[in-house]
Amino acid sequence: MSGTLYLCATPIGNLDDISMRCLNTLKAVDMIAAEDTRRTLTLLNHFEISKPLTSYHEHNKAQKGKYLISLLQDGKDIALVSDAGTVAISDPGEDLVSLCIDEGIQIVPIPGAVALINALIVSGLSTRRFAFEGFLSVNKRHRHEHLELLKNDTHTLIFYEAPHKLKTTLDDMLSVFGDRKIALVRELTKIHEEAFRTTLSGAVEYYKTQNPRGEYVLVIEGAKEAKEDAENPLNELPLIEHIEHYIKSGMTSKEAIKQVSLDRKIPKREVYNEYHKD
Picture 1 (tube, rainbow, N blue to C red):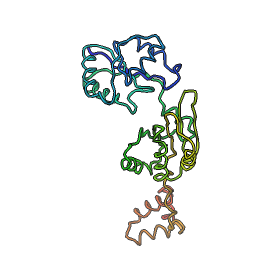
Picture 2: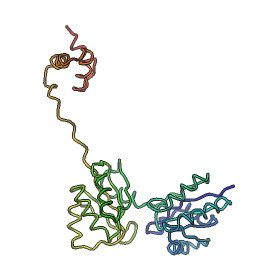
Picture 3: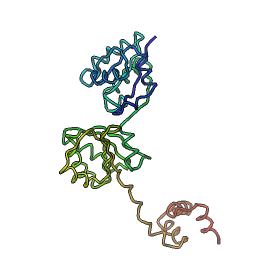
Picture 4: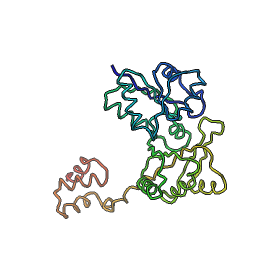
């Protein structure tokens, strides 16, 4: 019988955010696969957990993925963790999940901290509909193409960004999106946690004199909803004349009544009764 892959969310800063279920899972599995074994070892030592560790990251995922699958097929239980936060979000964990699905191996999520959601809820921007876009490309052309695809998206947009790329990213966003509200959330759950709520132009201006520090989550206001079409001038006509206009254009009376109902956003029965009342 195959083992189980546990997707374990670890703290993004404050170690108190780890769940009891996550701790129990890390203690129970046969092996822990970590994006950065040194960082994960620090976490395990803090909670006095001793387990075999193996690396699983972007540069070895093809080879190591096959190895982990073979262990799971032999009945071993494995916990997969990222550097911090929820695994398989903007990291190679998603590839291992796909491999497990292909092989019919059970996958169990162990919920916990995730930076994008925590940044969103403190941003002050709409949480009803949002889109997570991860990291933008370091290639200027690809980055612009990505932003161009999003400029008319009405969802609140969420990105991850490293401090050394922040200024360039803000410049590009202002150029493509125009000026919008933005919350720059950094160092979540850590001592220097900050949510800087401003506009894209304000952020560009601010970082002309300030050095970005820490990892950022950028939460940006979505595009404005397209305005409704201008009021149909035919709606200014008396109702009967409105109907007769469509009949003269070649519609049957039935078709004209239906179209007037749509134009005026009133029940078709009401239009019908008005037209036939005499």
